[in-house]
Image (tube, rainbow, N blue to C red; front, side):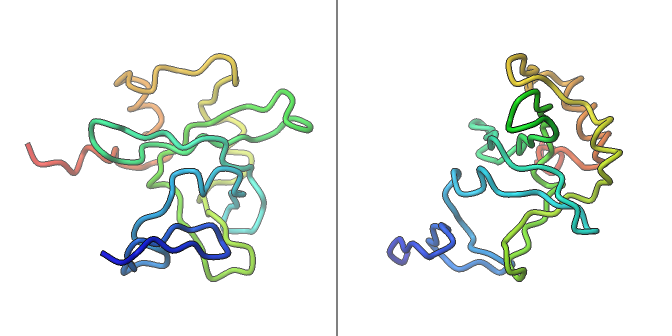
Length: 141
């Protein structure tokens, strides 16, 4: 394994990946990054990254949307696999294929009242809404 390098974008490169970015990166790197839809409309930004420690996977990005100066923001747990990282743009960004209006009606929560993200009915609701498969659906039994 090569030595740990830091680049100007804050990506911690350990090994080069086959995709558009590094194969591994620090978990705090995406916090604060903006989320856009394919039309280029800003949807919000990443407030938190939720890790499934047992599975060793990134489960969700918690997206902040709305409010004024961070007050009364509604939070959304967006499945990590619903996001696409675009590194070829001038400002590196994540893309979520969702209209602003659709996100406004998405299942969300208050910053002081987080849901039980391990609850199966909540998991099913979130993945159904974003039309994604749960990352554990690919496991072999």
